Image (cartoon, rainbow, N blue to C red; front, side, top):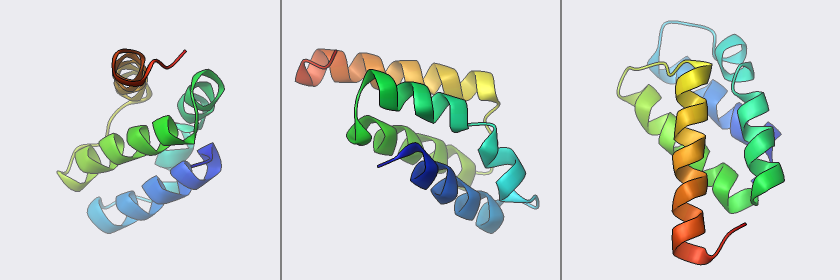
Length: 85
């Protein structure tokens, strides 16, 4: 998954789950997705999008700092499970 696709997925999840415009909120995650794409691959971007979407569906709206922390967990998990960078 490309970072732009991940942001779009979150826009839809936010629009469906929270009384807020998803475009504005999801755009704040773009740098995090881009960093994950640079350090790993589309699978990691997809995993991050899924983790953030789960939180959004539960009614939470992760801050950019929380998204970064989630990204680090995704990247760390990949290092231990599939020999990622």
